[in-house]
Image (spheres, rainbow, N blue to C red):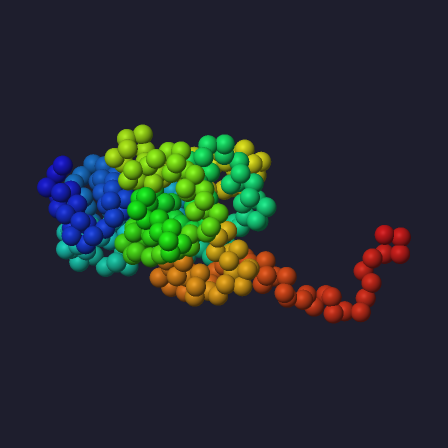
Length: 285
């Protein structure tokens, strides 16, 4: 490891960034340097601009990957190098206002019943029943289950924030069955190496296989279950503030987007078409 990479690693650790974020940022800066064949501290604002165009036009990276790169470059130049490059020279892409794809209750039921493996079924049930992010699921420990108070402790939420969320009765019964069968000692879902937790990739594969087995054609990923959790709570009459707390959102605005996809918001609104006194069906229709 070069002294510069070591310094960036230490800067990230001092600021208590998560291991996942540290890995992503270090890789992003390494790829930036490799693209130009120079040490990153010898590259400036024009190189950043050229690299951004390369990622968009040639490599055609996803919006999330592009944002990760921007965050890594901003941290590297402002913190590790302490170089005064205007952050406007390292811009974020315009925010997309896409609505999340929501699974119906019937689709969620089919997805959760699809896996024959008890571990996989339990894993998916937690994502939906507790509204967790994938990173939060992988970091769960057996000790995070508070069966007496019927809550699940989330120790590694986004931004290193801790919170508590629901622990439904059906999920608690499933977890007890899973524990009797698997006997996890520390990590709730250990990897093949019991000293390490399951990887996010393994969770994605589990969700994809379950969707295929359930015959669901929608593009489903683990976060789809978190979206369904929030939307179904909203449709059941739970207020936005409570859902915000359960999801661990920093801003209520983030939670409010589920208002646009909740069926109750659509079904309770009458179209002006129905107020017209007319018959649209042709006589011989």
